[in-house]
Image (tube, rainbow, N blue to C red):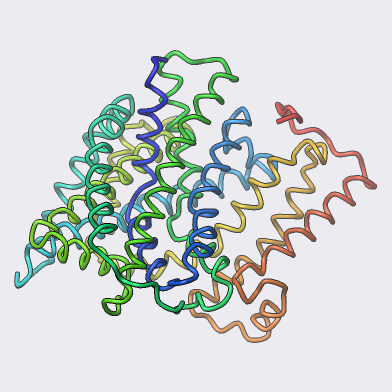
Length: 443
């Protein structure tokens, strides 16, 4: 690899991570958390930056990537879990969510008064997904388009908005509201789920490793090193942007009430730059959402073309863009309605699986430990997801609410620890566990 290739791959990874949720949630967190901002932001960064980096590090450490990690539970679990993740962060959830946000922020402000925005959305999404399809067709060009061209424009736009906001805005931090009055750290921790980046990291790992290998790197140690560098570059940029957007949101809190982060950023840009500010924030949202959709589309193409031998990469990319295009035209409200319950269920399973990966050799890679920990955590993760969907679970919900950390949305943590302990004890005193084929227990 050439000298600056890791840097540009890191920029590409940042651009793939940095989508709609990454823009919307930090300023809203800043506005609501007020005087508890730094505590809330620390929790947010832990799940929105730290967890995706840990996922990437785990993928780099284990030969075979996330599929091999999932196989430690069971090959069927690995396939089912990853298919659900890819479909969710791909065409059925994250892709249409990003396309809709790009439309609402990049187009709607300029077509207000148009009698039928449905037609405008149809035309916008057609052009949007055509460009996504064309760029995603050749994954070897992703680093060039995303890392060298689009991301620098996105970062410059973000710097202009935040720097001017720091200088011009002088609002005082307000008292915490919206759940940040107590337990601000845990509230921020849970808000970090909404970026979906830990799940995206499961998919993006294959894209980054492919980009590195195509530069002639085949040694496993070097692959890990380049992956670490790219991940640290992306993580540093993400953390810096989150803190900057959060500070802007905190400064804006005294100027009025806002329903979400998009309203805050729209108000900031229009107040600071007028009509040109509306164009600036529209450009930021459109570029951020576009790069994420390209990354997710390419990741789906690479995963499903490998999972299904007869599936051609270009065909999978075409199908992904067509599904994304179709669901985008259903509207953002319906998409967001599904996302929170899904994330509430999927994140605990992802966290437990990845954390166990780093302690794999401590319990001799016993499959029973993985199965037990994920089963215990999974039961309560599903209950939490159903609860977030609005279902009345009666006595089951009562049981969930009595668990430690339930008041901060982390009721699955203690069951996960108990499940891990149960698995370790049974594996230690029961029948000696068979090693997982092809595994190095030191990984």
